[in-house]
Amino acid sequence: MQVSRSLRTILLIELFVPILLLTIGIYHGLMQVIYRSGVIQRTSVAGLDYYQGLTLHGVINAIVLTTFFAVAFGHATMFFYTKREPNRTATFLSMLLMVAGTGLAAAAILAGKASVLYTFYPPLKAHPAFYIGTAMLIIGSWIPYLDWIGMYLRWKKENPNESTPVAVIGTLVNFTIWFVCTLAVAYEVLVMLVPWSLGWVQEINIMLARTLFWFFGHALVYFWLLPSYIMFYTMLPKLAGGKLYSGNAGRIAFFIFLILSIPIGVHHQFGDPSIGRGVKITQSILTFGVAIPSFITAFTIAASLEYAARLRGAKGLWSWIWKLPFFRKDVFLFGYLINGLILFIFGGLTGLVNASYSLNNVVHNTSFIPGHFHLTVGGPVFLAILGMSIYMLSQLSGKRIFAPVLNTIVPYLWTVGVLIFSAGLMYGGLIGEPRRTNMGLTYLNPSSEQFNPYWVVSSMLGLAGGGIMFTAGLLYFISFFGTCLRRRSAEPVIDLPVSETLHEERRVPLLDSFRPWLAIMGLIIFLTYAPAISDALNNTNRKAPPYKPTDPVPVVRK
Image 1 (cartoon, rainbow, N blue to C red):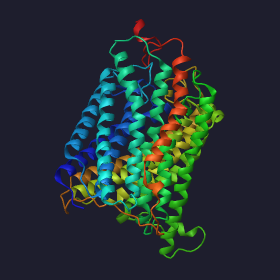
Image 2: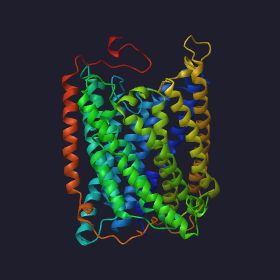
Image 3: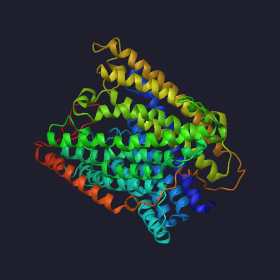
Image 4: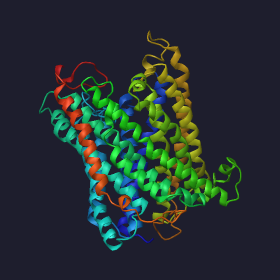
């Protein structure tokens, strides 16, 4: 499909800027495992301290990269399936706000004024520029969503008897979750954190801020994940050479995500005494419910892939797997998506540990947690973003991919690295290894009284896996930026792989309307979060002054 120059330019900026910043994010990922393994026994390297690096790693990889990509991919998806370009002014304004906000937040972190990690919850205090920049990034991402709603309604008016494409439902579900969940964090940032950071108020309600953050924070995981699900349903079967087993299965999965993604954030607060047991148990049960769309997806995609393999002549109960197009340069995107799916099997299973009230308390604030979320965010999310970013870059620029062999092996190398890295961190977590800690200063420094030899093996596994992940990242950057520097060899287009459904499916009205699902979503959120916020307001006694991560003394008392 031909694409206008203005939309093409904006999409290329939205792909290029986060991948450029990702070079910093991945560098600091490597530095984290080096610090934690005890190889470096210092507080800083090259003028950036441990917590600055940890904040850069988290903010760039988990918020900037994912938000920019979701917007760019959403533009491409809505344009491709509705045959309409997004509003030019809205698209430009959105990009401008996101780039300016990212620059503002990055400046605060690099200046050492915002080492508050990606969760940024108080009493850690950042410079107002960090909070304002983050708010600009989020508001910038809202603008396309409002524009896409209009595109969808116009398409629906012209095609009243057609089922809405799965990719369009997935995109709108994803940004509906994003819009609703960011309302809470927008309140936290604009009403609580910015006045506190400016010194207009001296203390802050920690529990309320944490509750508002996790209203957003866990739903954020699905905002990261759903673009991958869109690719699994609409592209992966086609890339494998087959068809999608069921489109309606995909629609059901997306609508379940819509109603269950937000009202489960309290499972991150099982250790918070101000939140009542009833709220925790309710949200724990609902968290298990999110496994349902993942199981639906696993069955549907596995059936679709088996069908594709049997079209290639595969026989036997399991041997069909080897007929899939692994390591083929012409369908390199298959490698990114299938490796993401493999990692997500382990990420989903370890996520069930976090959902359990009692097991969560065992692993809470240990290295098990980053071990788990690198299997999800660092698995299907990250690999889908990398694969689709270079795919869209090649199409939108009309340039052939540089070093296609390197590009093809990146997801396999990354997968090996993540499996070793996460195994090390989760093993360490089970024997008490803390997260977010510069262990080179204490627990893995033999000259320290706090040295703990039991965490040497787990941290060395983390270092080995992290090193392999860093190498895979380097190979990707060579291919991505090498492609940017090539000469154009074709007309710029947007042409996404489209999987046909295996079975003819009639339009099901319930799966083609947002209204009933939105009503259920609103009801469940109210029933689960009204008591949680009431607890946060009424069960908190003293408010807290601000702190820095490197100093146990409150800032206001100095």
